[in-house]
Image (cartoon, rainbow, N blue to C red; front, side):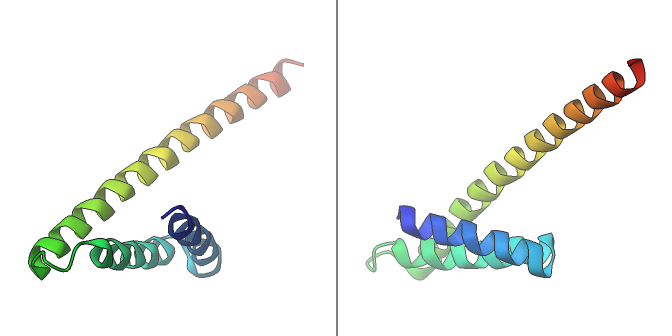
Length: 89
């Protein structure tokens, strides 16, 4: 499972830089949906499997967006700090 996650993250990075952030996110979300869909037991109906997979992808997307938002806040704080230091010296 960790290997799948690492592959998905690597693909996301590649697509994000080559094709734009939105396309990269959509591709990774699609791949994650397929992985989560295939990971469900075969005895579960396809609609339930799809619902579980979609919920897992949305939850993972929320974590990624929260991480991106936090990193943007950190970058802004560093930019403000560097601006303040540059203009006070």
